[in-house]
Length: 607
Ligand SMILES: Nc1nc2c(ncn2[C@@H]2O[C@H](COP(=O)(O)OP(=O)(O)OP(=O)(O)O)[C@@H](O)[C@H]2O)c(=O)[nH]1
Image 1 (cartoon, rainbow, N blue to C red):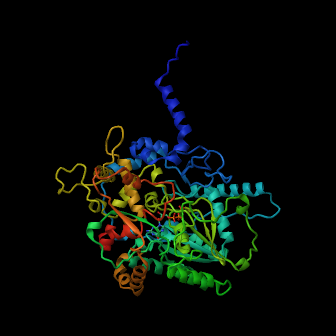
Image 2 (tube, rainbow, N blue to C red; image 1 turned 120 degrees about the vertical axis):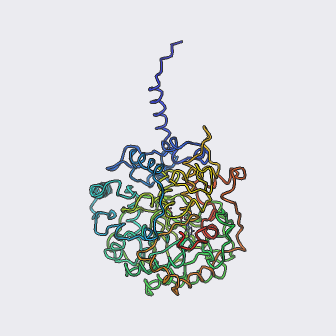
Image 3 (cartoon, protein in one colour; image 1 turned 120 degrees about the horizontal axis):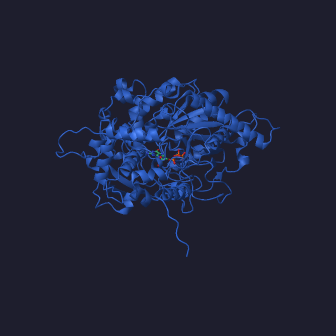
């Protein structure tokens, strides 16, 4: 038998590294809840490192990798449309980790929560979005593709040449996803830009407004979505802000999960986790307003009476195509819709596209990941037709669905436009898959210096002998205290799993259970005016009229801050971010969760 060759530690390391490299992509997309629960911080970071060196011009991280090798069942590559962000350098990650451990958190003033769109997007600068370069019918498909690729590289080069990585936000580096936006814009008669009411400025690139309303000459409807997650006065203030700054906008307030803001919240219910079963898409607030906006835009050129009738039927308790009022079986996943996967679906249409072709209005739903585009479509239809997930980037290719014979909806994958937003804020805005964040701690710090996380979660400082004494907190302490409270331990050494705690805190924020809202400029000073504004009272009333539906939905409540003994595996898993679909509108972060949101109990001053 041949003698075994001596194997140095270095060689062993290399062997392990190679093995990890091979597994990497698969693990990243497949991370199971048990896997992510048990690991230490360092191991997890390696798993999420999915860069494969083929970056466009910079180091790119490809997120949400799907496990399947080769082409998927419908003949497309499931990884073609995943999120591509610039990777944070190792030094930057280390620097941030040090800051999270060392920097004492100081609460910021309310004015700091005011976001000025000009500072975020610097209109007129290179912080634009990529356009499809001019083309002609004489060009072959290959020529067209390579021209688009070249032009996209130039676009990226300009941005990266003008700003350092530290200044730039995360933004989409995957040309395939931008191509989907181009296609949806070309198909649309009306464009719906969907934004999250907690930070609509983050989701509103002025360059897109100029392009849609100017160059394309299309109507742009701004949907201020998830209004259940913000104080009504703030919703009204944002609406007026956008009206004033962007006069061509049509503005609609929407929520797929309305809640009755008039019901007093009991403090004992703070931070309870609710799961809702059964019907959930039938009570959206906003379809009527959206219809009115579309009627104003189409001015009788399309017959929208079928839509109006549908809304009337929904209000009366039935839904279109489902007159019995029973929710359809969803076991086979979302109902029929057309998934636009083929390359020919992505080919440009000529400039002379006929508006309202065949008497049908095509409404393109675009926006950042996780703002609720798919939920809005389900809310309009009244049942689940497109898949929803709290993992950003869930919708990968555009999909169309006929709401009624004369109204076609088109759901576009979420897109992140370049800006100067801090990356921590972007994480809290839900654009980054939380389970794949390289360094979550500074985002926790960003949150905790804007809302009193420690007080809300009744956290005890890890070094506090006397719990009543004041201790300076840093982001790391908060994560450690939350890990302690929740019983998050690393598998090997049974130390506090700070990484998991940080992820859990970020999920609470993204879901709206820890509520961080940003304000339009001047809001802090004029808060009283907005609170007594007649539209504020109207909004409170309208939310009360539609939701929530106590009689038709089952609710389960679980004490989120229960001790670890009480916490079963199932509960732990509910904290994890699954790539999968939200089964029904369960684990609904909306209505009931926020009804128990401590920030629903606190005055805005206290936030
Ligand atoms: N509270 C609340 N949550 C909502 C609302 N609409 C959507 N959500 C939640 O927001 C998350 C994202 O919803 P989606 O509809 O998948 O968002 P999307 O914009 O299609 O996301 P991508 O697929 O990443 O582009 C899910 O967890 C939804 O349950 C709403 O009106 N209120």
